[in-house]
Length: 393
Image (cartoon, rainbow, N blue to C red; front, side, top):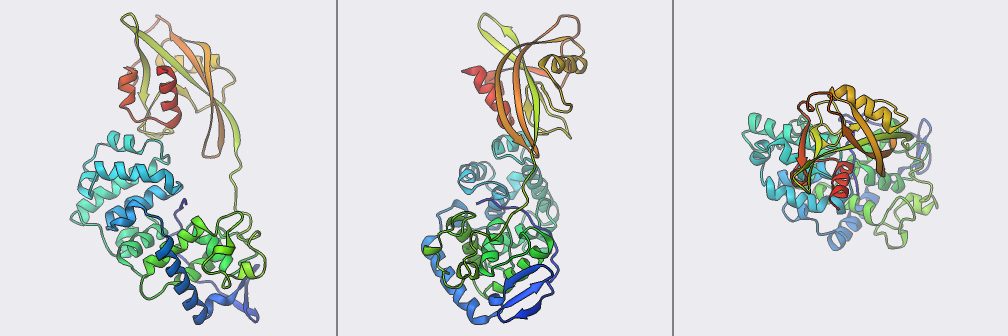
């Protein structure tokens, strides 16, 4: 179950009746069952009962303090829950409260985040913790307006934090609930992420909330999307709201929520150069640097990697690095090729050995030589870590 932040504001949908049980807004079509009080009561009762019997045992559900729920919600954005669990537990061991997070060194924070990706989330949390210390006396705020004002927090995240921790009657809309609500009302005519559909789904999310246990309802809807109402081949036969779902009744579960916008990836070749110097008879150190502000993986450490321009060969990469270091660089044999994706790019990372000439000064700061043991203690990107592990094998 991964989650994404949503817009901070929602505009109520303007719907007009077209025929009994259906409404239409522009090209949108959906069943109006959600406007029926009896339907809502039945759905809430079934869903909450199912959740009480089937909720996963997640560490942030055992103790739903505002701080713990906030950390979990930020980590779960764009990341699967199974991946998040060990990171969450290590993070809470290192930073058990807002004060310790606010006082953390960024390198330690990024090291604990390594592998989760989307590192801006970690920096936003760091900034938010500092703001809470400065403006809220170290206590996590409890008003929606103050929570949404924190760095890295949008409407969905603020609603999730307050509803789960305080049972506040606040709607949420993220990947799983977009799909679940769309199927419940047989939403057609636009993908859930398109503005007209999003506005309608926020209205539905708010209308569905019970007076009590709003946080439990929100979690139950997300859990249903993660475990039962999955994107492909939903398990309708075991769904607790089977019989109330308009998409299931109309045989539309395979078509709803429809095509979501997909990233159009661009193929790209990049080069990383491994430059070593011998220490003693057997040990080696490798040239690395901390990536400066504005660079990809800002604040992490990496081997020399050429990412800014399209380069055709390792020799071209070596020439470009030569200009940056002020000393000649010669590319050597290829060590490996790594495939990975960054934003809209599908990258083939060509990793080559390289050597420095003796025609210039040693590489200037922030470049430095580190042993593999020292590199092990530095926060790195996933592929940077993989290069280090390859060198140590």
